[in-house]
Each structure stands twice: as C-alpha cells, then as structure tokens.
Image (cartoon, rainbow, N blue to C red; front, side, top):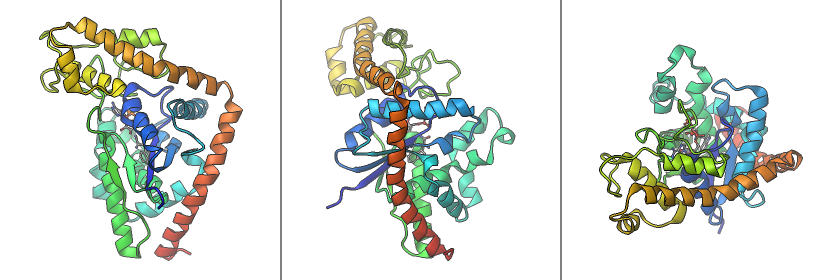
Amino acid sequence: MAQPRIYSGMQPSSGSLHLGNYIGALQQWRRMQDDYDAFFSIVDLHAITVPQSPEVLREQVRTLAAQYMAGGIDPDRSCLYVQSHVAAHAQLAWLLSTITGFGEASRMTQFKDKTAKGGQEAASVGLFTYPILMAADILLYDADIVPVGDDQKQHVELTRDLAERFNKRFGKTFTVPKPQILADGARIYDLQNPQSKMSKSADTDKGVVWLLDEPTKTAKKIRSAVTDTDGAIRADREAKPGVTNLLEILTAMTGEPVAALEARFEGQGYGAFKTEVADAVVAELAPVRERTLELLADPAELDRLLAANAERAAEVADATLARAMEAMGLR
Ligand code: ATP
Ligand code: LTN
C-alpha cells in the first residue's frame, strides 16, 4: 500500500533557523520521512509577503536548503524543493482565493499578529492572502498530514475548509488534510522572554538560539536563560515559564521525559541544570551547523538537487492543478 503523504514548509526569511524551528519542525520531519511519502518546501513566495532584499533572499533559500539536509532531510527520499520553482502554487492560490470568504480570511490570527505593530496600512495584500497560498501548497500534493507548530494550526484548518468547499461545489478534487502538532515542545519560548515564542523576528536575539550560531555562543545563551527565584526544577508553564521551557528543550534533545528530568534534578541548583541543557543542545546542533557549512561550500550541487526535486514536485502539482481547473470549467 502507498505510504500516506506529508507536506510541510518553512520560510527562507532569516539567515538561520532557530531552536524552535528545529524542534517544532525539522526534527519531526526527519523522523516522519521513514513512514511517509514526504514533500518539504522552501516557501520563498511566502517570504516575499514582507519586504526582502533579492540578493539576501537568494542566499537564504540556499542556506535553508542546506539546513534541511544537514538536519537529516534526505533529498533522494523526500522531495525537498523551492516553492517558486513550481508555477502551480501561485496558480492554484488564485483559484482558491475565489472561494475564500473575505471575513474568513480576516479571521486569521497570524495576519492580525503580524500587522499589530506596523498597522494594516503598511501590510501587503499578499500578507493577507498568505494562508490561501499555504492551502494551495498543501492541496496540490494531496497531502494527508501536515506537520507544523501550533501557530500554523489555524491555516491548516482553513485548508481543510477550502478543500471540503471545493469538493462539494465542483466535485471531489482534493484530499482533505489533517494537521499534526507535537504535544511536548510544540512551542519553544524565547530564553530571555519565556512568555513569547522563540521567533526569527524578535526585537533582540539574546534569547534566540540560531542553528548556525557558534557552539560557545549557544552555550552562553542557554546558561544566561531567564529562570525564577523559587529554585525548584519542575514544569509549570504559568508560574515557571523559563524553567519549563528549558525542561522541554532538554526533553526534545535527549528524549528523557520531563517527569524523569524533574526527579533526576530534585534538590539540584539551576547552574548544573542549565549546563546540562547547554551541553545537550550543543551536542545536537554543532554537527548540524558543520554539515550546513559543508553543503554551502558547493552551491552548484545544491542548485542541481533543488532543480531535480522541483521537476518531481511539478509533475504532481501540475496534475492536481489541471484537475482543479477542469472541475471549475476553465479547461
Ligand atoms: P516568525 O516568528 O518570524 O513568524 P518563525 O520563527 O515562526 O517566524 P516560520 O518559518 O514561520 O518561522 O516557521 C517554521 C516552522 O517552525 C513552523 O512549522 C512553525 O510552527 C515552527 N516554529 C516556529 N517557531 C517555533 C517555536 N518557537 N517553537 C516551535 N515551533 C516553532
Ligand atoms: N506558513 C508556514 C510555512 C508554510 C507551510 C506551508 C507549512 C507555507 N506553506 C504548507 C506547512 C504546509 C509557516 O510560516 N511556518
């Protein structure tokens, strides 16, 4: 029997992934590629919904591809490609935009969050229709499952609604996908401000662990993480967000459950605990960083791999687009 299909993507909107992206996305993807037929994209069309410098964007696409591979995505097994290399994404997004309600799109919380600072006047229409392009990504590949962090769940719900609506109106065309969210460590928080999620777009990066940071810098950021004065190493998201975040990070790195960590660290101070977290993160990330740098040293080979995978992706995507156009009376 054919394996179920998964689809996910990340934006090439920074020079490096951070620990939240690694735990909330990349680690999960790597584990899933054995059991699923996997498509992983670099969503550059999503990245340009906010201003990007063309030269920087081009570099960041390669850097992200290298990080996917260094993090364990095998480009021979999983289809790792760049969204803009496959024209069908933008085409299906247009078709889907015509069946999306304006009010429905207005309820997407990511748009509200991203425009909270600069205001809606400064935002592009592309930022507003971002979730429709994401729906096109997923539906083009008939994905069964979409592994994402919980911040993306609402977009996958919209994708399901659009697929069901399209199928009802125009006949069965799309597979209705399900989101898959990691329970523990689904959200990693900023080390300096453990109330907010670790993010590329934080005001300062003191609390953000970048995959491509030097190991000494990573260790220092973790040892300087904000905790509390209560002194106990136990998980409590409300009362002890800093310690809870570090516990979840350690669990994600070593697989040791939070309850076991709480028992093992009973009576110990934060110093020893933070050192262990720092060592575990460095042990995991240092080889990923090294491998990324090696891959980036041969950009022609990276480009070749991405081009070959875009061809594989386009075969699937073009067939789905043709089906959707046909169903809508466009061909
Ligand atoms: P920004 O914070 O600027 O919106 P981002 O850091 O969330 O960007 P994305 O490219 O939007 O990065 O996200 C890539 C993937 O990483 C998504 O699946 C998202 O859910 C996941 N992710 C992002 N931040 C975290 C986090 N702090 N903890 C867990 N997963 C995360
Ligand atoms: N919006 C997502 C990135 C993304 C995605 C997708 C994830 C674009 N298309 C399709 C899963 C499936 C984000 O910002 N993390």
